[in-house]
Length: 114
Image 1 (tube, rainbow, N blue to C red):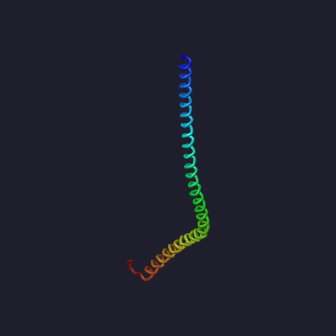
Image 2: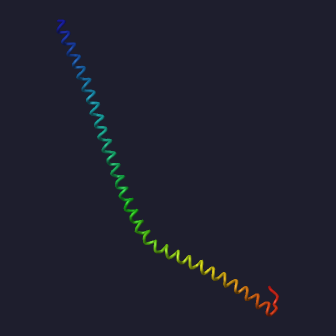
């Protein structure tokens, strides 16, 4: 009878250890399933980031091609700005010359300055 009790106790021990190991394995399996789902979700996110990066790359290439066509206009604007500066200098010289002529005419006809 004592041997039956010992066998029953050992059977209970093995059953409990088996249940514990099964629980540990199930927990590990649940963690692995969760990690797999997380990896799938992260992969989807990165795929979305890849799509965004691809779109940005195309956008940057379009901007580069547009800026290349603007370079010609920028050069023309710079040329016009330089010509305007030179024109302003000529106008300033003409203004001084006209003022000098006005002074000479006034002194020649002795017109009092206004």
